[in-house]
Image 1: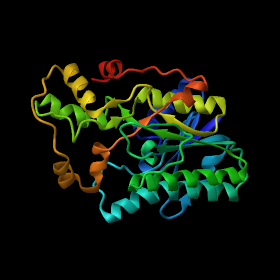
Image 2 (image 1 turned 180 degrees about the vertical axis):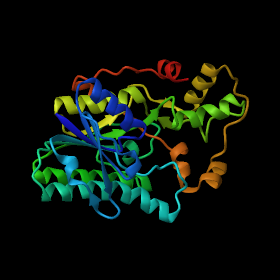
Image 3 (image 1 turned 120 degrees about the vertical axis):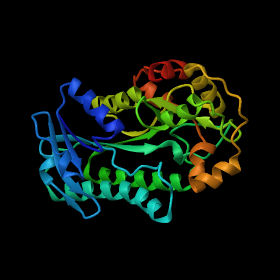
Length: 300
């Protein structure tokens, strides 16, 4: 088996590559930077430019599965133009892959696409499963709907499609956790808004292993990729403070202040979803990190 990955040099993609190589699976990857192209027996790079519809069709040779992680970061300020970039970076990349597969002879049987739990409405009491059809009215939910629709079209080619609705990924590298840890280390950390908003989190190791699990078992459909025990923003803040040996003395950061600073992006920290992982567990996946305490101990 050979796997084609988009976003292979990113936080999640690079770890998935390591998982695949550990399992003896060679990887082709698509990159928009010609400087990042490598060529070895188990790791081959190919150029593409989804904006311009350019792609090296040799990238699909011998490929049985595609893992599509391509998408612009949502952590940059949401100007009108950047919101367009966020949306189009996800749909144009999937559309280019789909269009190319229509034009060539290929052996692709499985598409595993990144997605997000932000499709679910903000709630402090309702637990969401993959069966829920309610969709939030936010920009991020709009992005996820379009993202998943772009993935679903691959079914028209007889390809199995899996969509991985990812929660807040915790990593020792750059990401959500580092942004939470830094102010606490400096002694100015505090819960955000009410502090009661849910954070459905997942350790970086688990999200990468879930992709590998879906690939190895040929799974299709929607899967929530979150740990079994979500925590509130307040509890997360308290657990991080305990782990770094700092006390919390400031009052909660007011919601209006975060909205002034972040604009529409404030929903990333002020809203959250309580999300279930039962479906992926029923397929036989066993989480390495179930509790926030063990995850933080490993990462901080």
